Amino acid sequence: MGRKSVQKERKELDTKQEKWLKKVLPYFYENGVRKVTMDEISDYLGISKATIYNYFKSKEELIEAAVWLKLSDLAVMKEYLFNDDLDFIERYHEGVKHFTNNLGGLTTEYLNELKVFFPNCWEPIQLFQDVSVENLMQYYSMGIERGILSNFNIALMAQQDRIFFDLVTDAAFLAKHNLSIQLAFEEYFNAKFNGILSR
Image (cartoon, rainbow, N blue to C red):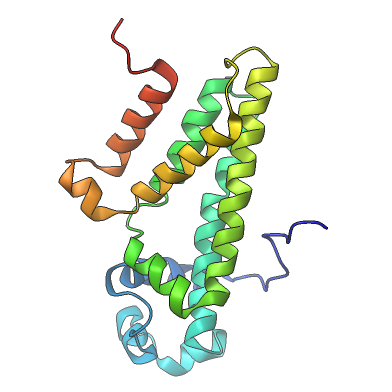
C-alpha cells in the first residue's frame, strides 16, 4: 500500500491570492486561527469580505491554502538536497538553511490550533513532515554510500533534524537561549558536521 501523496490535486493560486496569503500568515502566527474571524482577516488585508469569498469559500479554505503555500516554500529543501551541481555538504547547508529560515515567525501555538481545530489543514503538514524525514534519510544514505559521510543510523539522524525544526518554531525556547533562527541553524549545522569536541 503506497503513501498518500503530499501533492494532492489543488487549484492553482493566482498572484493576488498568494500575496494575500503571504500577508495574512504572520497575522495567523501571532493571533492563532481558531478565534480569528473573516471580518478581522478582511480588515487586516484591507479588502472586503465579499472579495475574499470570491476566492475562498470559507475561513478553513483560506487557512488550508495558506498552509499549502507555506509547505510549497518549505519543499524547496528537497531541490537543494539532491542538486548535483552543489557540493554534497553544501546541499544540506543550503537546503536546511532555506527550510529553517522559512519557518521564521511560525509558532507552536499556531501549529497546535491547526492540529486540534483544523484537522484537514493539519494532515498535509504531517505528511510533509514524514516526506521531509524520508528525503533527509535518502540524503544521508547517499552520503554514506559515496563515502562522504561516516556510517550511522540515518533514521535517528533524520529524526534529530525533525526535532530541530520543531525547536525553531518555539519562540520561548529561542528567546530563553538568546538565539535567532539563523544563529540556531548555524550552531546546529556546525555541531552536526564539525562535531562538538575541541580539536
